[in-house]
Image (cartoon, rainbow, N blue to C red; front, side, top):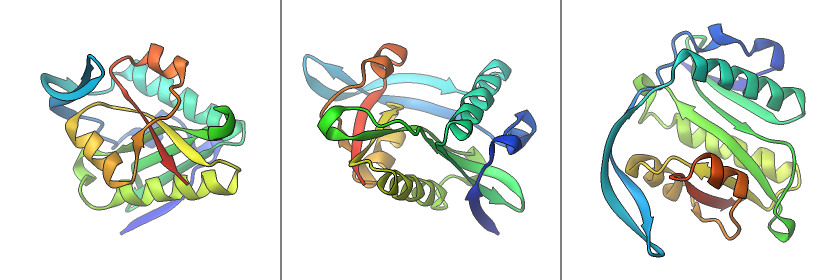
Length: 176
């Protein structure tokens, strides 16, 4: 049985991710060339190292500590998906809140978990004064299909820090 609940700062540690499988085999990605988005071959395997997990734990703890949203999907008590939204509005009239992460364990993809997590993030953002969620999203074709199915479009205003940190990500927004 899949259950969902807020994850508190004190719950966030490396052990929480013990059975979480980040693995993603990517073959095609969206790339912007001369102002036009195109699907390009760009095969690679995306997986998290131990250092990546420790960075994730630190970032999620900070999100929870500063009043942001950290929400998880659990299968038989084991974390199988999570989403986080940062608490600070940005973007002037766009009134964005940053959807800083959304991931579903490889063994649980295709079961609607991502949709539930995204909708929970959108609702949280709405109740916290946002007009839109901002997403610096993985450019893999499968990832982009998910975001577009959720109603995301190219961001009206790009967040410079996100673009610099992940130049191949697609910068998206979604009305809340």
